[in-house]
Length: 226
Image (tube, rainbow, N blue to C red; front, side, top):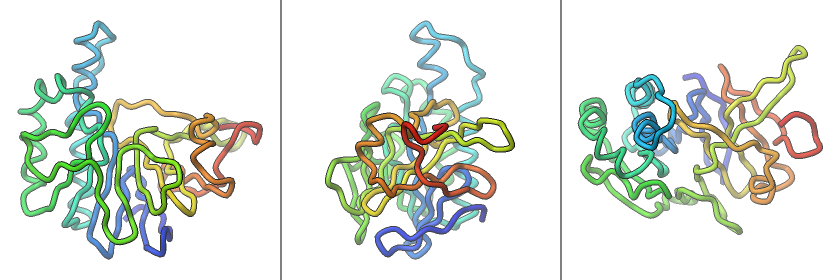
């Protein structure tokens, strides 16, 4: 398993290179912001035509993590589809790839701001979910403890061998963890953005997606590339 072990709220977790989070003691796999159907939505709204492979690529990676970890529970932290019309237009393609992986697993869809959750696919549909000390939701809130969320698609930049590299990342402090977007066609919000700086404590770290993932102090405005 290609990941970085971390301790969060006294729980042993693994930040995987794919952007998924693995909770071994609960056999729980967590992903955020799949944004399935983004290519369809962009064309529908007059945007550029993207290669139509994002659903297959995103779901193949998700199914692969389910199999690699042996997950018994999967939590999708919202914005699983890019919008409701995309959910309807791509439902058949998504079901064909995802339904076999959902069988025999407790699948939880957390509501996002782009969609209320793909009801037609089955599973549990919740606004948020608490398991022990951890609370799973879509958007981070002020004053939260033990919160795991998505929404912001965090990324950070580092300088390596004279080159500036931008990577999606996990953000983590003592109170919360924000997951990177798992979807193929997703942008990101830099860790230097005031929104993220205002949410995360000064001792927050970023876990950059790489093989293996790399943990660094969270880059902030005025501290170098971010």
